[in-house]
Length: 200
Length: 200
Image 1 (cartoon, each protein chain N blue to C red):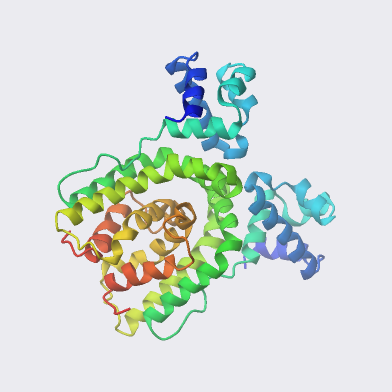
Image 2 (tube, rainbow over the protein chains, first blue to last red):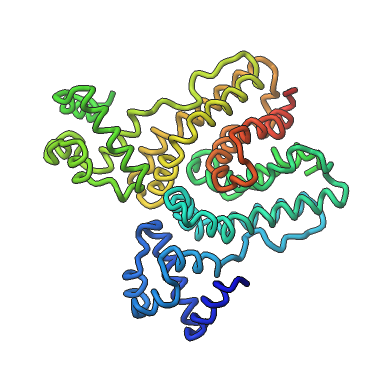
């Protein structure tokens, strides 16, 4: 932990974990509802009946508060998948993605837009929201390579995480083509497993 | 053209095409800069020195104006690609995507967020922004099927457009993995062409 992070944690320690979770939840709700611009220190203060001065003292700036709220839910959707086969793992990833989907698409879109419009947030967002998902899928593929299911030099290896995450971001825009939640699983079977040379 | 569209066109006819293009450009600029919520009739009027009453009379509502502005640039990035081979076509698509990329990512993100938050815009956005791109890529794949390059029943056929469009939306979030503009071409070579059983 950096000195800065340690200081910030010490400052936050006056707030109970329950209260902190409540504040973060309010931030994420505002993000989902109206995007990054809809999050204001005033709005968070009003929703949580927390003093605005407290918010500024604890988190410093709006980017600081938003980043902390996103980091707190850093539970990667794809983390912890390990069924023993690549097909099993990717099917499980597809299942988890469709479960999570409804709730978090708005957040993903809000984050994506903030990412483009607010360069100061990029590193924080990438580390807290994007990187953990990519790392979790990369780990699934790496285990398949280690087991000998996939050739280490298969050039498709680098694209499993990006194509899966891209598909998740696009499928809501293509809902006439993918009317049900199984599009991701179908993509795994039709594209990823064949190109990785594994039987589905 | 529907009666409604014809009426709207007749009403707009008092505005010169140049003026209309200028108004639409202002709308798209506001969309890129701040998302859908940043577009207001007031803001467009101020930027273009156009009377607010004129805007309301010509386009009726903000969703009407935004949809018209998006429809006017309905030049699908992927339209008109026809090199004679699937590999050539998909490489050309990758090239065009990276060319267009810098300018239009902000617009895509703004549209994606508006899509989720404003159900009244969905049909219009899908028809004017998403569907033409999907149709253009589908046409590329269909021609490859017609030429016998790709089996018509290859299940990957349905995923060419979605995975390509998904990758384009995600690659900015993964810029450490894809630092240059050739990620889409690499995806074509590493994933799409092999899975469609065509030599790259």
